[in-house]
Length: 62
Image (cartoon, rainbow, N blue to C red; front, side):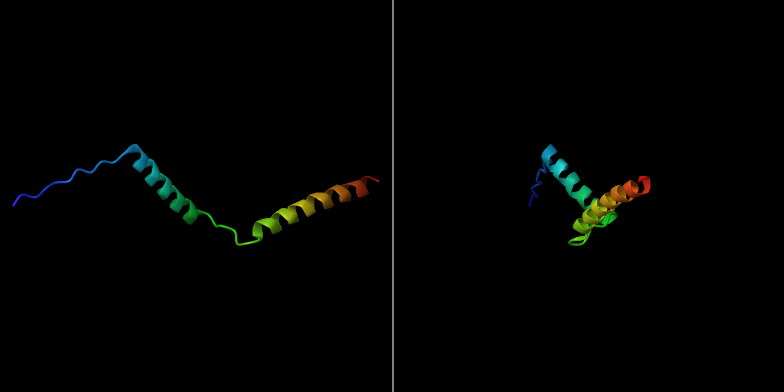
């Protein structure tokens, strides 16, 4: 009985796809993903801080 040996062909596309998958898994492990609503709250707080600093600086100079 002779065993047939298969040929495995790895294309450039396969290598790129594999590297993208490994990068995504590394990124998701290394940084925290914000919970739902945290980004919006952060944006609103940042805008509020900017607006309040504009008005507080005007009051000081008057």
